[in-house]
Image (cartoon, rainbow, N blue to C red; front, side, top):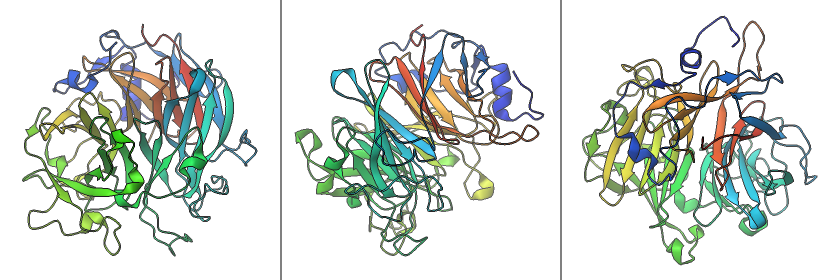
Length: 459
């Protein structure tokens, strides 16, 4: 393992956790992994130490291998232009005849040198540089096609898949028309059809709110959509739910509108103040958002009544598991306005019982052997447990967390975008698994690279 002249918390973990370490936190980890049939299969040692990649791209445990599916700057197979930069959130959706559709976000701002190419019928704002591209793979993982799925959006960070086989891509910005050169308001969610993007077009789902969106998760039974807000300044973001007007299980559409509400935890104005794993809050309240379009005032600054609303710093990853929605606060810093400090929280909301529980808490008073300082994109792994992308400084990893609460390193970005004296690595994003659970797909943000990782996942 190379020495880089400094040791961040991540590098410390990478050097000490090759065979797995126990996290110094409490909590009922098993509830995180409800519904994973093979959840007990992974042993206590992860998959072993990472092996340096001779090609300098991606370090993996022995027995695993990767393929580069797509890289920024290469020609799109559709001929529409070049592969855009800043690969971020992603999903893998099943197609016909064993095919897989990878829908990939590009978190491009208006200064991006490799924007998403504009395509007629798929472009929201010609001045927006973000959007999504789709890769279609055959049953053997070979790339068959690659094209623009939506263009003209801005800062497409994360999102979430729907039970009906589409991708909800989120704009992490609140820029309005006339700001930064944009000709339309931004800060919306857009639905992307992976097989036929022209069927979904480039229509903002305005009723779902205009704010700095991060990720979404859909309750497959009720059709409710949960949304996280990664606001950059205090007051920080809110946790939302969207109640569609049309029942989605009955063939309804998100375009038919609905009610946007924000979560209120009674007597808890800031989630960072809760630092005891297992802490549970009953009778969670949902308050109607006064102005979902944030016509004059950002939603998090609007008047939610004398009892206020509950905020949290860096609300990012969001996913549905079992009968609950899980969401991530990547970190909180009192110096930036949070009530307390931490390196990450994972919360569980049970809608049937209106119950919120802090499931996992990362520091600052726990062991420094953590799965990164800033958990971001997160997904359930078919072998049981979680896969977590970290987003911070220093070496960048994909970490696994087992049901037993052990952390292991799954992948390390070996692409040094700095110098030998001052190395730098781009974050990981968009971790997801193929529908059959045999392949992990993950993005390197910079330089934008999409990997397919195969190996003994169910060992």
